[in-house]
Image 1: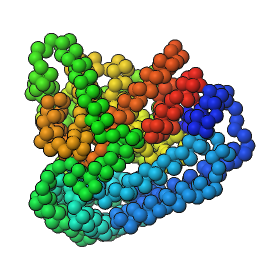
Image 2 (image 1 turned 90 degrees about the horizontal axis):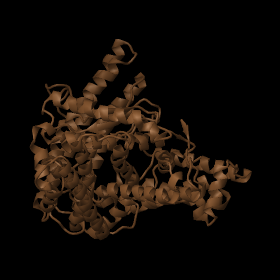
Image 3 (image 1 turned 45 degrees about the vertical axis):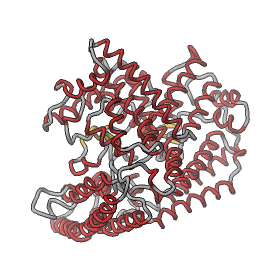
Length: 618
């Protein structure tokens, strides 16, 4: 475990109205907090730990992900009642904190945690207000494929009781899938139905979860293969292993299968309703109170009060800027033609694609691992501290490729039993472009999500609600900033790869335009796809997947560019103010040093660091 790098003294001094420079200087001089504040800090830290324990106790799967084996034989409650219980607990905890603690008696670091705890409850309150507007089944993920991934990646079997808990969870799946089916039907009855294009791939992926042995004579189902592998490695006698395997098979072919069959039935029913709806592939403006829902989603996704119109305009401006930079590279490589013709060239020339074969997929993984490795070698020149957790690059499993994102990151287990994983979707290599692999690797792997998410988990002294919580605008903003940082680190030596870097940033700028276009300006799915075609390098498959993702997860796609622009803006502000005193490693320590925070809090942190004169944070 590492210490908390950033003292928030100056930040919270600003909030409390105390001169920021003096507070920061005290912190950098190593002055100890008064004994009374230390005592109150310890009491508040104990409160935060208790609050965290109470919250995760409502989620057996969260405890498993954290390496805790309490309620190891249970799955989460997927009902509305459970969501209400979770919010009620958060509200009670907030009221308790305000009743039992006075911010004036706390140190600056503790006041920061106070502020973030309160902000988190406010966000949960807003999210819960619009819970019933959300699509359970989205273009880039759903709860039916999430459960097998959880069992395979998170449920360890170190003992016979662990194996029995695995079987119990297979049995529990029938209850969970029943709850998911009930919610699906209830939301449909209220007019909240996923766009029509969601149902075919979702039904196919859900059906794949109950295909293969032991459900039929085909190759082993991934969950059954996982269970057999884990039982095979277990230290137990042959009779016990045989019993466990028989129980696992019975659980899969019985309650597990019944649960998934039930979801398939519900999906078929609601899918038929989607077919009959007008605007059945449109934005959330078509839902009851759709405009208000989308505005809430933007607030939750960006942690700002930016309006849809403002975000749309920012996107248009960024698209124009980035395309201008791409034109410069076209001149450098001697390409004569329009930007759209350059896009077509990169999409069709074989030199920019991998073979659509197992060997082609393996070459992609090899290249991605090499990009991560070169970052790791150069990182000490740009970061004062690095995460201790390992990072792996893996292909998305075939049974969830159809609804998986293009690439994504899974956080490591706190106890080191599971590495951070950078997943890539290699379902169709004809749709993968070599010039984009480098930037994507820096975003999803290092120095992107791994340097931020894994690092935050390892911060000693940070309350666990901060170590394991977070905000998309911060996390995705950092990921996109990391793509740009790779250029400063000396990478993208191939101009086509540098063009690819700009194309992935352009992709996120196009997101601002298309997300707001779909949900606020009533663009059609086809309009958004055509805008993508004209303004981005994405392959046809990825363009469709992206637009469908935005339609089913409104607002989320705006987090990347809004977050990145804020991180870049704050860095430029610091460079201008500090001049020769600016050190990039120190800036990164400030940005990463308090975990994932709302953008307004990040701005306060950087402003306070600037006011303190820069330097290495405590």
